[in-house]
Image (cartoon, rainbow, N blue to C red; front, side):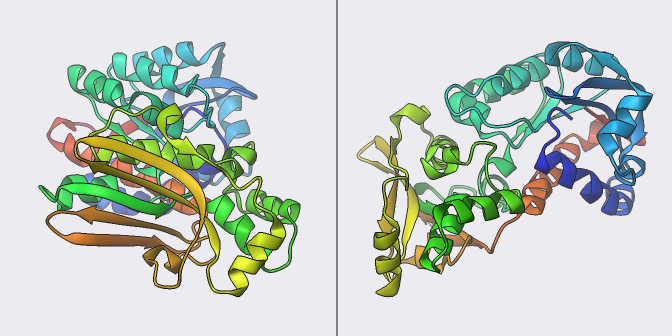
Length: 349
C-alpha cells in the first residue's frame, strides 16, 4: 500500500469488514506486507499482517512500522515488496496534475516487476493509460483504476463487463465533488473558504483544494474518460479547462435563484473522427439531466449508439466510496486470475 491518506485509511476498515465475504467467496485473506508514505517512511513486513488485525489498531501505520523494517525510497519499497511475495500494489498517493509523477513512476515500476496494480490516483491514468495498459499486457498482470473517476461507481467495469459493443460516442458529467459542494454552499450563503473547509473535513478535497476549484481534478477525470471510453490519446493539456475561481458569489447565487445552478461540467465527444473534451462552469437548465446533481452529487450521462443515453448518479460521495472502488478493483483482479490462486493468502503492498 503506497500512500496513506484518506483513501488508504478508509480502505483498511473496509477490508476488515468484508474479510468474511472475501474468505467465503474468493477463498482469500488480505495481508498487508508493506505501507509506504513519503512523510512517514516506507515499511515492509516479511510475513505481512492481516488487514483485519491491522485495522483494529488506533494508528495502523504506527503499529505496522513498529513491527516492520524501513527502506529508503518508493522504488526500493516496490522491489523489496515484490521479492517478499507481494502480488498487488495499491497506489494511493496524492495527485500531481502537472505530469502525474511520482505516481506514474510507481505504477510503471510495479507493473514492470510483475505486480498487479490498483490505483486511485488520476495522474498516471490521465497521462499514460495506453502505455500502462500495454505494459500490463506484456507482463501478464492487471492495471485497474475504477476509483479515479466517480469514486466507487462502476463506470469502467460497467462498460468492460456489462456493455459490450455499446459504442459510446460522448459523455457529459459532474465529476468534481469539491467544486459542486463549494458552489452549493455558496448558493446557501456560505463563503468560498467555508465551502473549502467543509470539503476538507469530509476528506473529498485534493491535498491542494485549488486543484479541484481550478478544474485540474475534473480535467484529469475527463481525460481518463475520453481515452478509456472514446479510444482517445488525449493529454490533460489538450482538454480545454476553465475552473470556478473567477465566478463571483453573486453570479452563483443569482443563477441558483432562477433554477439554473452553475456547476463545473465535463464533456467529451467524437465527431467525424475528431475527439474533443472540455471542463467549464455552466448553468444547468431544469431539464438538463445533470440537474439531478444537487449538492455534492456526481452524475455522468453516457451517449451510446446501442443504448441511447445511460445516466449514472452517485449521491453525496464521501471517501468511503473511493475506498470501495479500490476494494472493487481488488476483487476484480482476484476474480480475473482466480485459476492462478493456489494459496489462502494474497499479500498486498
